[in-house]
Amino acid sequence: MTDPVLLCYCTYPDSAKSAGFARTLVEEGLATCVNRLPGVRSTYRWQGKVSTDVEELLLIKTTAARFEALKARVLELHPYELPELIAVPVERGHEAYLDWVRAGVLI
Image 1 (tube, rainbow, N blue to C red):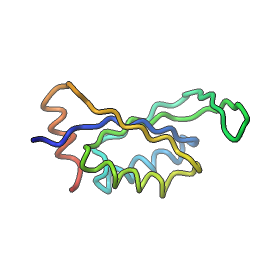
Image 2: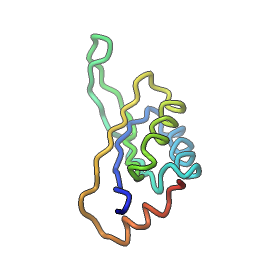
Image 3: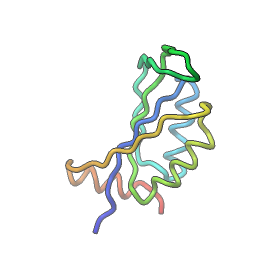
Image 4: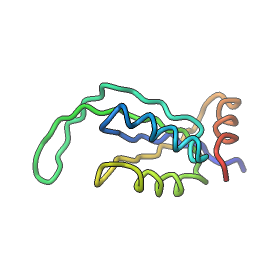
């Protein structure tokens, strides 16, 4: 059975530093690709207060086998006390692309 591909969502507060964060995840073989989408406006409740901030949304492509290692590294490197990290299984896709994602992570 092939390793399922995951698309992980993670917001990041600083676009200048998110480039290094994304690069680290790819260089360490935790992700094959990280897309950085700037200008996301997030409205959220934190510690009893409603806030709105501008963030970058990171779309991280990895596999189920690498998720726990990816999560540990995100929690270690991310500046937020409680970073967003949500993994969604990719149920369908261009098989050659999905194979590329699988090949790009280091196990």
